[in-house]
Image 1 (cartoon, rainbow, N blue to C red):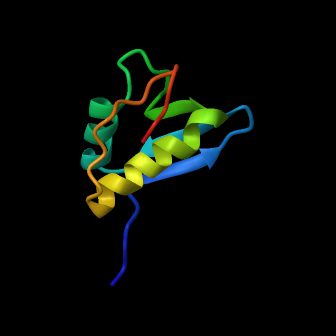
Image 2 (image 1 turned 180 degrees about the horizontal axis):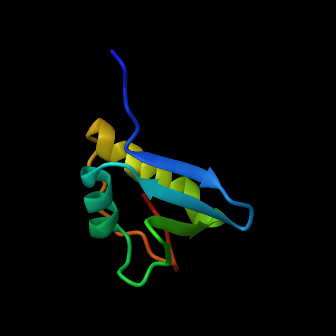
Length: 78
């Protein structure tokens, strides 16, 4: 079985870029990331210190772990 990714994550140097590839991924980001997050086109730009937590939250969504906390610039606890 081939698994297709929902999000492309790239280390762009000073930030990580999260590019949702599916509608479900975009919806999850919209529901779990603060509204004033920085977007570059269709990709969400995230500071290095928050990237791991956001990636874990996205993976939890995919595996059904049920992430409920919102990602914010101040604190990421997923």
